[in-house]
Length: 211
Ligand SMILES: Nc1ncnc2c1ncn2[C@@H]1O[C@H](COP(=O)(O)OP(=O)(O)O)[C@@H](O)[C@H]1O
Ligand SMILES: Cc1cn([C@H]2C[C@H](O)[C@@H](COP(=O)(O)OP(=O)(O)O)O2)c(=O)[nH]c1=O
Image 1 (tube, rainbow, N blue to C red):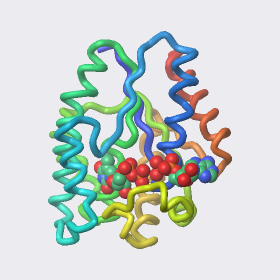
Image 2 (spheres, rainbow, N blue to C red; image 1 turned 45 degrees about the vertical axis):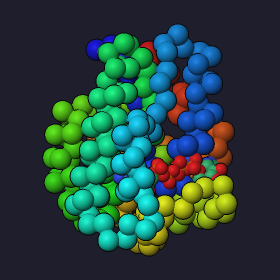
Image 3 (cartoon, helix red, strand yellow; image 1 turned 90 degrees about the vertical axis):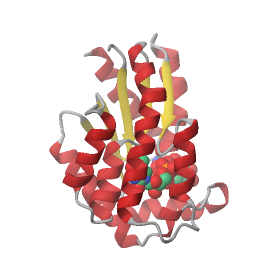
Image 4 (cartoon, protein in one colour; image 1 turned 180 degrees about the vertical axis):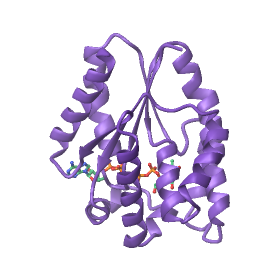
């Protein structure tokens, strides 16, 4: 498999969606390889249906393990339908969120255990790990402030109902995961101006592609 698998991670409001939007045309201009941009939760028809179920603000009674299993199930379907076929045909796949999100949100913040959630995801992904992960780091309250400022343009989902404390746990878990996987994860300060964050992401990807 010659494709390259890049994931973008970070707390809510870190700027993942905004960064990817600007990054794509920059990459398309400079590299020959075809790019497939996708996102989790979702990214395929069945996985988008699972996304609706997980993020529906009315599903307040959803159990934490059910939530973790649904994310893993959606991930499996998305992987089989979209990511693996792209990698098998040598494409560059850029995915907004992947397993690290489940480790941080369900494993750490929900308290299910990072190790336990890693195990169900190893089953779901058959141990596929990204070649590179850009971790956009931001303090939880800053990410939430960004989202609140732009509430009208963004859908309010079930995880947005969580407390600041929950989002702080997410961020601490990401920092720990990044520290433990320096060979794969590059940490970028997402509190900088958007243009600077995009440029740093771009340079990191180009450096990885030259390897
Ligand atoms: N570097 C930045 N500086 C200031 N605002 C930003 C920056 N990056 C993103 N934003 C704004 O913050 C909000 C959340 O960004 P978004 O890209 O949706 O984040 P995410 O996908 O990580 O949740 C958006 O309104 C976006 O315009
Ligand atoms: C992929 C994934 C996302 N999530 C959460 C993070 C987000 O709060 C929510 C929706 O993800 P997303 O649509 O990426 O939201 P945002 O643009 O705010 O980052 O799902 C998990 O809890 N576990 C996971 O495995």
